[in-house]
Image (cartoon, rainbow, N blue to C red; front, top):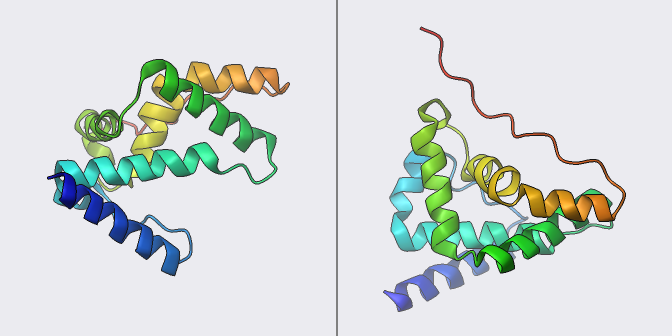
Length: 141
């Protein structure tokens, strides 16, 4: 099982190196489910890693990265935790099954569990707090 995870991560890294930064090969909940638990963990951790190292000389992005790193250390976030949060987002918001896993990550990790850490980093840089995540609206009857 570990070898399969390593292989998947290696293939994901090779694909990332050969293409511009894109993670949209998993475009919705159906594609997310097809990854299976190991693939979901690898994909979600790659997403988390990119969000914690990308700064682009922008204070908002730097604060997000610093906050996510502090969140991961404090809450001891593992790849499986991030994958579970993404899956839970989809379960809680059936109307968002067409959304990418990034939207789920943004809703339940970045603007959810890690929001206090990101807002602390933003405050330290003199930035305003993040706005709450615009979660999908429930379908009208």
